[in-house]
Image (tube, helix red, strand yellow):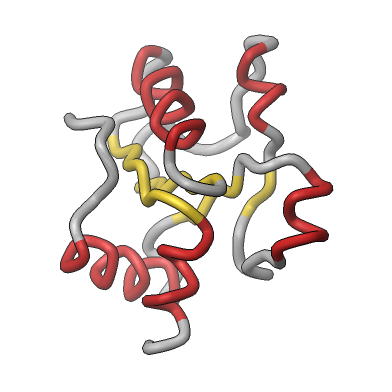
Length: 106
């Protein structure tokens, strides 16, 4: 499984899955970033710093999870960490603006 950001087509598919509850959107930005830049109300929030401390979200290991941050770097690291801990379907969605571009069009 790649830790690179997903393609535009995959981003559209992710949006559809998230909107119907077949996948989780995980926002790993700091709270101040969410307040400053906005956030998706459907997203689960867990600050990136918690992952660096070894904490993981309370989600099923087989859940489909799309992780985003501001630009995709931290989301890629989180995807790697989660996969290393047995999460099977974790994808780097990229940045919040990537999400907004497809979510607004949906």
